[in-house]
Length: 316
Image 1 (cartoon, rainbow, N blue to C red):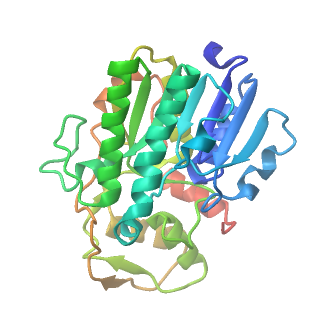
Image 2: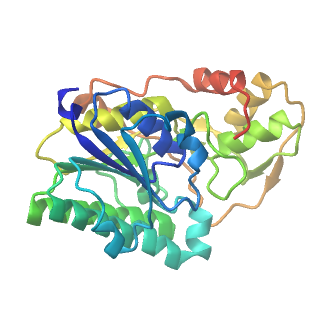
Image 3: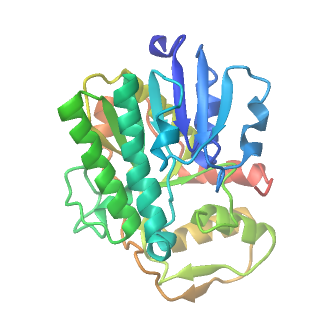
């Protein structure tokens, strides 16, 4: 990609699960410099160890909710904003933290982009902005009605990004991530995805809990597909568009459990627990807008992605 040749890039949250996969993909291009801004509260330095000898990469330990530190970050051409508190349950119990990182932090990044005349911001929104939709698949013009402080914070980010485009001509693209999974996703924190949790429990032959009746549906998107789409969005100019980033395929939690149990030779039955606050019943993306705008698609089907995780059994 010509636009990335000799470019300087900032990746906030770059030591996290999605972030380090994005950094790995970016380093395949002839980039001049990649600055990773991460407070390491959930991200890990070890995620960046494979790239530690690449002089183009620099880690800056920083909390993006502190504007005095953000404004002093080096000037860059492109910004990928992935830093966030990403747990729906934690957004209820730690709502102030959710606000500071997800809303104040994002506004700080927008202001930084304005002051340093960055060419574009690509940022993580979430399918959580939809709440419980009235119909599926969910298109980008569906009603925004989040059921958690996390989903609300992401909807505010989208408003901020459109405002900065209108008032200050800051280009951006927001991606409403559906359920992202892949190698390196932690299984032992409140931020963990259901696939990473099921995977470790099955490897250890532990007990598995499913919240609700297991018929709630999700759209699982493989990390390798996701980061390629994020990078390709650099080529979209003069925009503040929002895109669903999923596969358009619906899978119930019960279906997921059965598929993984077969792959991992797991013979125990799950334990069904009470539904958690903010949990969404149906979630699957309408990806027509994504298809119309990008040559790269989320093409890895769920069985292929799960088999890849089975064949790469490191517990991380």
